Amino acid sequence: MLHSPYLPLVLAPFVGSFLGVLASRLPRGEPVVFARSACAHCGAVLGPRDLVPIVSYLAQKGKCRTCGGVIHLSHLVMEVLAVMVAATVLWAVGLPGNGGAASPFPVWGGCVFGWGLLTLGAIDLACLRLPDILTLPLVAAGLAMAAPQGVASVLWHGGAAVLGYGAFRAISLLYRRVRGHDGLGLGDAKLLAAGGAWLGLQALPHVVLLAALVTLCGAAIAGRGRLDRGQAVPFGPGLALAMWGIWLWQARPDGLAL
Image 1 (tube, rainbow, N blue to C red):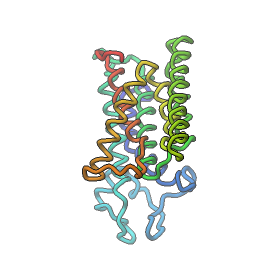
Image 2 (cartoon, rainbow, N blue to C red; image 1 turned 90 degrees about the vertical axis):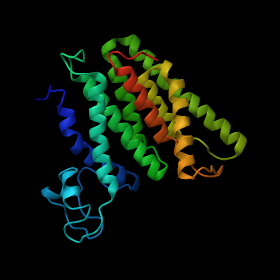
Image 3 (cartoon, rainbow, N blue to C red; image 1 turned 120 degrees about the horizontal axis):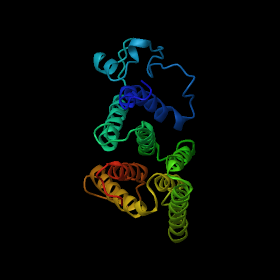
């Protein structure tokens, strides 16, 4: 069962449930792993039947079984998106016997990348933060995924990570010098470093371009067609979407390397 390519898809709703808790509690400095799940309104500890991903939310119509308080929709969204991540990984990597990967390693690796990007994008969208505790392990995981291709591949992807971080760091320093305040956070630079570690040097210009387009479109939609120059706009979700899309493109057996 551990070697089944479908196992990540089966586990995805439970992973999404955990990621929803992580995205909610981590920015507030609350315990994630050892704290019991409880209603945000009445504090009632949730039982097993309250914690079945997707099913519990729908069965209870998005309300606490004890007090009737509304359960935030973000929990359901994270669970559904985690399933979508696993499904798109299976689509991209393919299945053994259908020209896909013979090993579960690329499937699990892709899911880790997608789930990590999902969590970081959600946190940045809500809090304008990209925590090091999530971005830095994602860099390491990208280099680990390059290891089976040999030392040269690790060095290539490691160099891309350094260049990605360095480029955004330089832009951040230049912006601060010219404008007198921060315009690009270090979290964005570390997330681009993760993109370099996973995707390679040749993908970085495409990541930045797509991320900028996604971010501008999102800001325009949120502002109903108006862009306020002084408004803080999270860049992490755009970076995450761009990196995920390019990873899927690269992972396809019939896809073209950027």
